[in-house]
Amino acid sequence: MNRRWWQDAVFYQVYVRSFADADGDGIGDLAGVTSRVPYLAGLGVDALWLTPFYPSPQADHGYDVADYRDVDPVFGDLGDFDALLSAAHASGLAMIVDIVPNHTSSEHPWFQDALRSAAGSPERARYVFRPGRGRDGAEPPNSWRSVFGGSAWRQVPDGEWYLHLFDVGQPDLNWENPEVGDEFEDILRFWLDRGVDGFRIDVAHALVKQQGLPDYRRGEPVPHWDQPEVHDVYRRWRKVLDSYAGDRMAIAEAWVDAPEAMALYVRPDELQQAFNFHWLEAPWSAAAFRRVIVETLAAVDPVDSPPTWVLSNHDVDRHVSRYGGGARGLSRARAATLTMLALPGSAYVYAGEELGLPQVDVPEKARQDPGWLRGGRAGRDGCRVPIPWSGIAPPYGFGPDAGAPTWLPQPPEWAGLSVAAQDRDPESTLTFYRKALRARRDVVSSLGQRIELLDTAPGVLAFRREPGVVCVINCGSRRARVGQYGEPVIASGSADQVASGWLPGDTAAWFRDA
Ligand code: NOJ
Image 1 (cartoon, rainbow, N blue to C red):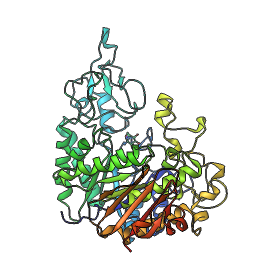
Image 2: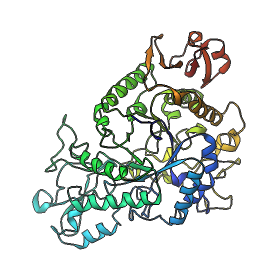
Image 3: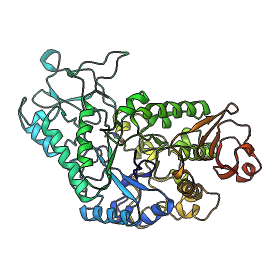
Image 4: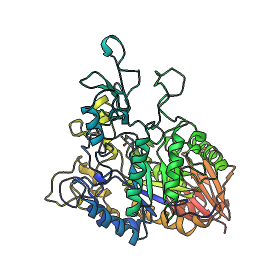
């Protein structure tokens, strides 16, 4: 395989609402991101992924799109988008945007037309409308549940029901209707023509539903995830991507159970990447990490596609907190990150993880995640709290001091976590990320794509990449001997101990042949 820019790129996920607020309304925006491009280039990432900024009622913070070819005024306008893309490219950063093909917003003109049209009309055929069951069709058409809680069906005044696997404001599109595929090809081209380097595809495994929309059956595959026909969509998209110069790419967000199912999305005529959520789902355990690495590499090898790795995003608890929180959670998070950055393939970093931000327990009255509002689950607000840039009190430089309060409240104890507070501190997590990303460019990117797992003590995982780099992570609590692996390159914790031949618990390090 020829070397492609994305195959070992580090992507940085910008959750636009929470990144930087240029206009002072308490919500991040595109001009805010542009103002921070020098920071991102200095961090050492290769590419940006922007979460949805399209016109939207924001029922699911932009994952409910009302117009796929514009910018929501809350985030700016198309001029701001073009300015950001140019600034990113001028700084050597690629940029991909989020595409949301499974559902539109209920405010999208197509859905509004469908509501105004009769059952059986072409307007309704763009979505998944069905008659109800039971007496007078008063029961939903099947037993499917919304990911955010409750039935996945909502009845409209004439008695039909529409499918929404997510919020009621996110009606599912009918991908069996050729009009839908044509429309999305056109949307892809709209953004490719503007110069984006690719797409992150939202719930990529959901577009096609099982024929007949059968009820769930215990122990059987869920009838609305990962249907074989969904791959036809991505074969078509691949042709679109390949018709542009500049090595455009796309990554599937497909939460599938088996690594082999994930690998189907990255077959040679489909997408370039798929998120490897098995890495993110692994508990803090050398054996679990080892298993995921082995299974992932085995799954992608036959399709000749480089793997991806990710530890945090806007849908899951931040990894500092998943690994136990506090100083120990932070040590572990840094160690897992350093390990991820040593693996072959591409890595995704979520805004704020370079500051070691923990999951926040957002006060209930301030929560906005539809998952919380519909189902009472703790929700995802806690990983979406606006980034602290500077200063000793909210908004910590997120927006102008005299601006509106940030859309989610920032904790009063975040002063020490801000970019300014960490910028020059040699021990800070920010400094560690900068060093790790530089070391990855200097050392890892020239290495071979294969790894050799080494024999280690229990609780320790070590692998070698030729020629001559070893990564070791110690998930145990007792120190492990590492003097045999060569010269230390970088450690996620105490460099002194590593230099004297010992790797403390909850720590990772890279070594180079002496
Ligand atoms: C996955 C996105 O990452 C998530 O934030 C969103 O709620 C769902 N897809 C629905 O679009």
